[in-house]
Length: 79
Image (cartoon, rainbow, N blue to C red):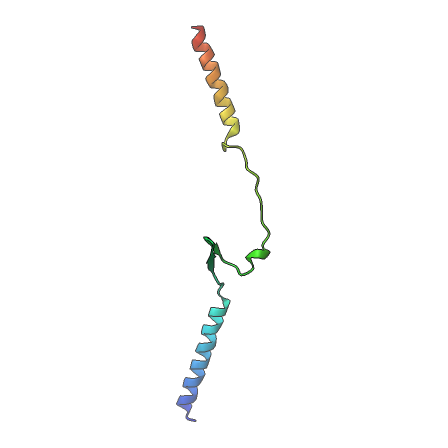
């Protein structure tokens, strides 16, 4: 074999290994029943449940606003 052919084959072999290595390191993404599943092990993942919180993100402020509104309405009735 000639040196030029050997270099070309070596280059192609290394390039092929690099491409296969890059493809093998990527995750596989699929869509099932409207869900995007990014891991083939999605069934083994632990489900984290977060209980529902209060309707308003600021419940103390809502309570204070209601008290202030009630006080304002009482003061308007007195006059």
